[in-house]
Image (cartoon, rainbow, N blue to C red; front, top):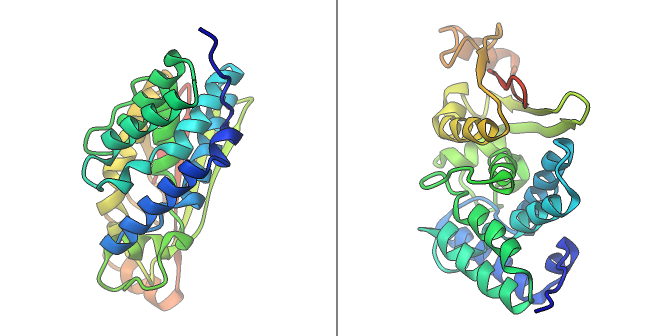
Length: 256
């Protein structure tokens, strides 16, 4: 049987995919979640592909990572609960109809089905790249216009992010995740309250590439607990707390 060579661009412009991505985002908006629409999908797609390209994976595997990154949240159309599993089934149906080879569908569906924190595990390279790209997407623009920052920790943490970037160094095989947080909006501890599990998951994803985690301390962030006077000092000076997550695929480092 002759199968179709489905490219990421085919997925991006597919009208059915567009409906599912936006419907899922709309459902999460009604539930009070941050943005999970096309901006999030496209970012995850780009970075999942970039990570594997930096690690010299073949072109087709990188393309599959881009497809998985774009489709990974379509299960929110059904329900937020178990959205990774329902999204994998939806992707299976969609890609089968598009006549993609079953070997490629299996890789994409495995990645989507294992990306949510509650049941996540990096089962293959595409899965690991998706986890790293998805869990690193923290930014102010994900906070919805009607959000109440004071009452929701997820909105508050995302809104406090002044700058976030994920850079890939192909020569050193380094994934550098930089976040600058305005601690007048979000205390440092609140960042770790919701992102510690995600960092642990990123470590597991890096393990697939033969990495390990090493924690370093910086003057303005001693381990997880900042100095007692740091909170007051930050309020006066509007200081920004800088978190660096370095994923080195020979010696992965998390700089806090």
